[in-house]
Image 1 (tube, rainbow, N blue to C red):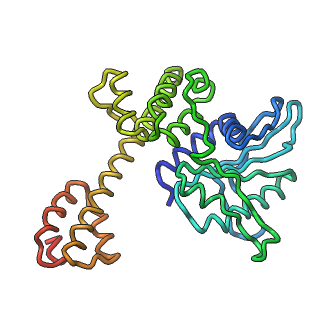
Image 2: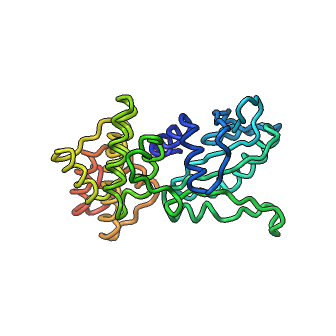
Length: 287
């Protein structure tokens, strides 16, 4: 099940083809030509087989004055390792090449360094190395570091991705400042979401610096997405705490018990955590 963050990042790239192309050109050192425009294409990649495959985002690159694309781009957002993707990514690329009848570039955006390394591993199709798919991967090592307000203003979505990849590093405050300054030019709804994404991915030090700049005691999230994201993180943390306490006390936490704990609201988890420190058996935990 895709996470909220995954869906937000997919929408960010899907709805702004020019930002996706700029990211790919900057991160991968490619040049598609200044006279090429990007347009969104169908993300559904179906073949004769009844199974339907859906990529995160698909773009066609069409030369100025032409109607047919000369290249297509598949952009996938990957937040964690998922072995199933190594089975579907080659299908995406071959299926789209057949449909478009042009070269197809498969690009994976992975904000985590560990996930980026995993995504970059070659996919051996035939088992002997004769047919191999090698996704182009954009991770922290090649994600642009956007610290200039002018650059952030030209590509606000690229500024957001820069914060997600580098916001917890040494340049976090500078990257965040450039992004926040650029977002002032956006419509209110888009700006709220982008500012929330910035504050969600800054280090504590960078966040404190930006809060000081904005004369805020503590930044309050504005978008529904950020509020849900923070709430879910809080619930996950409390769930893990209950499990750790039970296992430390020698109780076995099987999948059934874990799912029952995960189904509790935040307030109920507070009560479970207190009771986990003293119950005589797991059966008494929900009494």
